[in-house]
Length: 166
Length: 343
Image (tube, rainbow over all chains, first blue to last red; front, top):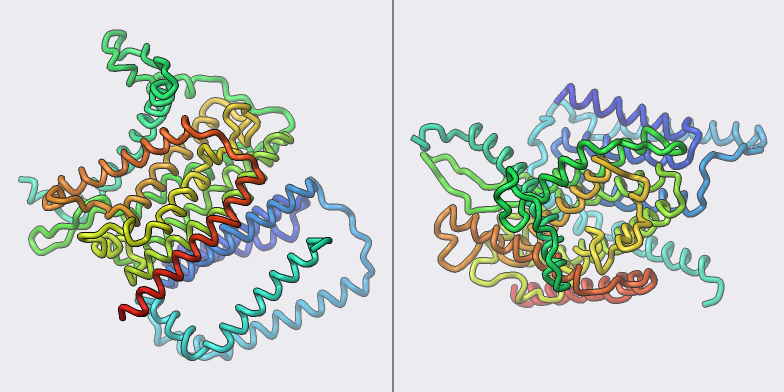
């Protein structure tokens, strides 16, 4: 399990870096796919097969296919040189650092990490489909529904923007 | 004597080897059945010449062996302007998920020997994501097509790959929502529970709509006629235009392996898996029942391919989004209402 963890996290980080650095958009897309598959593998080692399957179905199976579809539709074999002001670059770097630090800090101070020595990595989440459903439809019911409405709104606006004449 | 040799480890190895060999053998025989079936439907003779050791003709059943030898010894051409790495790994990426998905299918009745429970599927049924495993790994299969088509650096290949990706995404939605109906009525994602819930009444009767949607989506997911726009066999302007020899063969093998897994999943979800009146009392009988159903569905694949013409691309999309997805939603809602009122 430890070896699997190191191999998978190496793959995930390596491919995440390659997404940013590789010159061709479609290769970036494929590295993103590799990254998602590696993350799904990490979920399996954490004995959360349901989350892993969802990761594969939603992200690897649908979203990356769409991204690659759009890249192939535009038929961009190489990335164009961008003229971007230093202001934007600096500002986005700063924003990325702040957001990353925020995520890291929230994660470190969360209850999950506090209790990590009490959990076993294997078999700690038996029947996590039921647990997930219980939590989703009782405690987090309202946020869950609001997210659904947000998604529908986003979908309708996407259709509205792409259709010039309705 | 057999009982002494039977330990869970030995049984596992036997299962893995047997399933791999049987699936790949079925793939090989499938190509032969396809060609002979096509000939039968179109009132021709088909490949019947190849004879084992030059003597035993057995209706040309050794044709796949000849094909395999030909594919192995053909010159492996890599065109000049392709992306070499992606061009080489694309067939492998197509092939691996195709051979992985069958692992979750229970193909026979589980049994107890000396207090140890033996299950007849490679993955243990208790992994509790059963159906999702197949859907998740199965959704990786399209990348072989996309990568292959893009790496070929050929506009016809890219067109084929784009059609494949749009088609697979559209029909995957309908297929998954049809499966949700089965998962709802079973109350579990595990395929062995799906099968045992179908004792007496196969899901195809109460969930006819879902079965219909799944059945149609199955053809689209495996890129078979009437939805073979990714391949376009009669014009060969599909994703594997630039491929030859064993690389082409791996795409073909992946297609047939996907077909077998899709058919097996249909049998498991809607046709009662290894259930069959009287026959499923014995272990071998249950395996036989499963194989019989599987072969019947595979024959339907061949039958449909040589009977129906191809859909036009806009018709395919309209069917997917405006007919199949609403039908699968109707199926899901009907099953949910039925379950809620029955308690």
